[in-house]
Image (cartoon, rainbow, N blue to C red; front, side, top):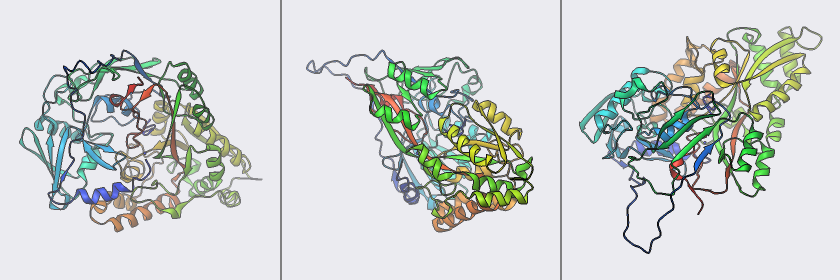
Amino acid sequence: MRWHKRLLVAGVAGAVAMTASACAGGQVRGADRSPKPSATTSDSAVPAAKANDATFVYAPNLDVVTDWDPATSYSNEIIAMSNIYEGLTRYNTQSQKPEPRLATEWTSAEGGKQWTFKLRQGVKFHTGASVDAEAAKKAIERTIKMNAGAAYIWGSVKTIETPDPATLKFTLKYAAPLDLIASSGYAAYIYDTAAADKLKDGKTDAGTGPYTIDTWQKGKETELTLKAYEGYWGGWKPEQYKKIAFRVTPEITTSWQLLQKGEVNFVPRMNPQLYEQAGATQGVQPSQTPSFQNLLLLFNTATGPMKDVRIRQALQLAIDYDGLIAALKGAGRKSTGLVPQGLIGYTAQLEPKQDLAKAQALLAEAGYGRDLPELKLKMTYAQGDEDQKLLVTLLSSALKELNVRLEAKPMAWNAQWDQGKKQGQDIFVMYWYPDYADAYSWFLNVFRSADKPQFNLSYLKNAEIDKEIDALPQLTATDRFAAEQSYATLQKQIIQDQAAVAVPYVQTYQRALTADVQGYVDNPAYPNVVFFYDLKPAS
């Protein structure tokens, strides 16, 4: 799913300010604060740390991997891939800036149209090959050429040069915050292109990260296990977790029981009732973080009864937004448009409201409703997602009063997505979050015209909207006020005029970990990712 795509923290407003400062000509960015190889010591007074033989067990509710290729990966596997692969930078949600990963520092010039990155020395791919500028260049160019998933993030790149083995020089077609873009959770990975043809089987990988694939058994309960890459440039300390397992557990109640028993260490999604229990349960630590992830109800604008804009508008008005937020009990906050608060493009003027009388009038105009023929609508949503199930319950009840029967079917993501690409439903429910800390992802991926829909599952086709979407990156880099206006206009066109989507809420992440885990920090720029290398068990 991208946690569906796309299964981020408060205060990412700083990302906008950071974007502007990052384009200052010649300014050096990114003092290297990354971990260094662990040093040995001869001081007998310092006790040796005990080796950690435990396996850290993550309990996702959906299949872990849909695509093993780091160039095209664009779904759930971010939770694994972010530990296997690395980019030039990583977004730090606390500082609200990109920080060094495979690049140790970078500069920009020409008003943000030229970027130079200095690469970390001594890094090896898991294949054994050395990471140098030429290898990094080949990875980015292959991703661009594949043109799948989030490859659009490199759309501003005109040329990449390698003046020396440690230097990558980018010349851009238009100004863009390349240090931020390079921190993307998708399509920004640097990998060994020589091994690219061997990656599909899930037996090998070509990353530089701290972990490498141990076993992959698609469809099994323990679908994926990772093991430490002993040659990792950051080094290893005895107490770090060297073994990771992803145990697919569709039902939240089951994963909660497993957490209490100590059979899993991390549950990425809790419902409000269980989250409240987690706070009062010995041996469990709760974690709550505001996000950039919102829920989308994508309406079929191309076929079926929803092709009538009046029915789509009626559906928007039938949703009990306030009741849903109250029922979520802290797990979500009301959306105002497509762009969550904290990102450029957020507008407070698009707060949705339920209006059943107006919904009834619109349905009547379309020939449905009370004392008129019954309208039947098909909805698909995520199997095992308690929040989406709650939405279905409330919406079904409201629509029943309007003589609309909602046939809502919970599905595994791959099945739901396959059906969606065939326009097999009236309403497609999924989460979306940005690929990097910028709102462009919603508009390009979800609402720009597509001959073969991937995530444009409202099937919206509008040349005027497409033109405005295409202008967003350069506008964001050069004229923030104009970009804000363009985002506001686009949201009104997509939500109000086209009625292609309803956006009920922005998620607040509610998670639970076993109390013996230290070092966990939620980084909503990488939704549901646990950076296992940063963790250790309590002493």
